Length: 434
Ligand code: SDX
Image 1 (cartoon, helix red, strand yellow):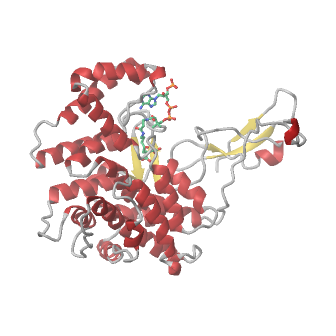
Image 2 (cartoon, rainbow, N blue to C red; image 1 turned 90 degrees about the horizontal axis):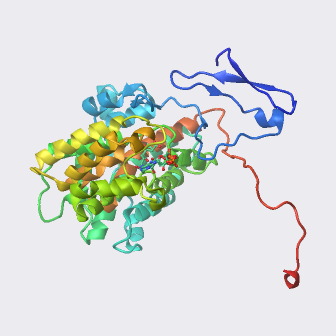
């Protein structure tokens, strides 16, 4: 709380009302308007939540003007270098980096929950082989609700914790199963001696016909990509999880709602859309055609966006995009890919956009999705799987935010109101008179 207040006055002489101003650790203060409706009979109006703080949180902080991202106070640049993904999971869930004993215990718990119930294979069989992996994942994560009646009581901290561990442990397995199913290949079971990212890569790309050789450089790249995507404050899918879970539904159902929201091309689906955009430019002539493409983006009637650019919060370079770009070069180098034409197009597109008045004026910079697609393609992931990889990583962010909300003693069901602009009350008209 601060000793500052904000007063709302009305030009029609209605009595002014005053609200407290609350300051956080850092970042914008908030005007606490929870009593606005009781005091004035009016709502605020903020479609898209451009100026609305939906909750108080201690998990992630973004400074959009400076292009800074902190998980529990630690800069993403430091975590991406010094930690592995499960360390970051522990940090997001419990608020501190693990010590050696905590790290070993947590990693073992997650590893011991990487298998899924064999019945899950029968859900998979219900899908067409060419089903979009996000359709499969939305269904499979929701279906997990049917398998763990022992961890559905939200008010039991032990059950909340086991749900978090199960979701973090099982998402990679479900994603790898969806890929194997699409390929007509047998499922590869997790191996407890492998790290989280190595286990995932093996479940994705191994076959029963040969031993799988873990490439530590590529595994490190996947692990770092998971770290970059782990959490991001109150983005659309996290807000979906919070609102869905505020009704008291189980965490598996709430995370399934987050998966569904992430699928959209304005959100997590942008990594798939960004690579398809680069494919299109490449197909039309590559770097030579970038000028034409940029012109279409600037043409309001074209409805063409520069996918992987722009962000509601970042009005500067997304710090994750810088790390992702570096990872792209590491992966291409390790794979001996000297000149990836898509990377050439992406880097030229970025160079042009960053010097073009249209993008400068609108503060449009590359976001995390601009380079991730090139990296994931080089790692062997099909384009349609990019967003499910985002979901694997973001599951820890969703579940950490869910846990924070459930443990908030003041938590209520989320129930926004509206500005009604529909028909005034009117009497029924018989069909003969319509
Ligand atoms: C993610 O919220 C998060 O934190 C999300 C995320 C996370 O980790 O959870 O960071 C992950 O979703 C990253 C964003 C991925 N999406 C894309 O790359 C898709 C392309 N980007 C745009 O759709 C857009 O930038 C959004 C959706 C990301 C942000 O949209 P806003 O904040 O609602 O901004 P806006 O659409 O109002 O854009 C402001 C102006 C508009 O022009 P005007 O109407 O004012 O003339 O900028 C234009 C937009 O048309 N604009 C773009 C553009 N993004 C915005 N023009 C061309 N290309 C773009 N990419």
